[in-house]
Image 1 (cartoon, rainbow, N blue to C red):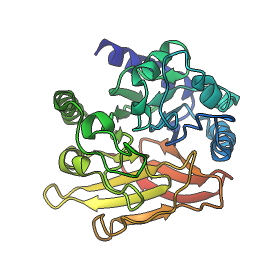
Image 2: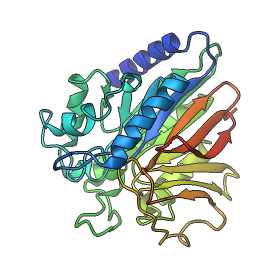
Image 3: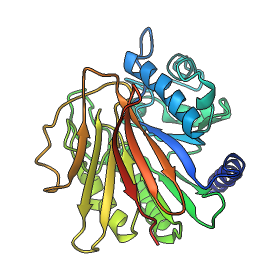
Length: 327
C-alpha cells in the first residue's frame, strides 16, 4: 500500500508540473507491443508505432503512457538483467517525447516468463513504472478540483494463462484462487471507494471482443458487474491484435459501459471469429488492416469530458469517442 500511495503522490506532482497553464490530462495507450525474442527484437509495426507515438506525444504534450501487457513476446523476460529490456524497449522507444512515465500491466506472454523481474525493472529505468502486479494511481486535472483514477489490474492472475500451447486457447481459471480472490477484493475496494470524476480500469484480457480470443468469461462474470455497479468510465485492454470499441448497457444497473481493445502495437490480426459472442449491437468500431503498421490510442481528459482517439501508425485518426464525467 505504501508503494501505491507513493506512486499516486508522484503522479500528482508530475501532472501538476506538466499541466501548468492547461486544463487536461493527456496520455497514450498501447497494448501487445512486445517485439520478438530474436533479432531484430522488434517488429516493423512496433517501430512504426514508436515513431508515430513520439509525434503525437510531442503534439499533445503527453504526460504519460499506459502499456496493456504482452510487453515481451513470446515468453516474457528471465530476470531484471534480461537484454530484452533494451533490445525491445529502451532501444525502440528512444524519442525524447516518449521519456515520460510508462505505467504497465502484464499480459499472458509476460506470465510465461518472470513478471517479478518486470516489476523490479522499475528500480532500473526512470520511466518504467510497474510497482506491483496490480496498483492504482490518481492524476488531478489541472486548474480544477476534478481527478482521474486508474485501476491497473492483472487479468492473468484473475483468470489464468491463455494460449498455453499458442493455439488461441481461452484462460481456464486462476492458477491460485486465493491470489485471485485477494485481487478481486482489492478491485472492488478501489472501485467502491472512488470519488474520482473519471475512473478507468485497465488490464490485458478484454471483457468483450469480437476477434480471435473473444470475450473473457471470468471477467464477464466477476469484473463486468463491478464496472457497471460502480459506474466506471471505461475499461481498456489488449490481447486481441486490433482496435475495437464496444458499448454495453447493463439491465440491472442501467449503466452504459465503454470497452476499448487497443492491442495492435506489434502484430495485426483481422479475425472476427467471435463477432456473435458479444452482446447484440455492442460493437461500435473495429479495425484490423493487415496492410498497415498497427495502431494505438491517445486520450485527453478535461473537467468536461474524456476523448479517446484511435490512430493508425501513420497518424490517421480512425475513430473517436467522448465520455462524460461520472458525476
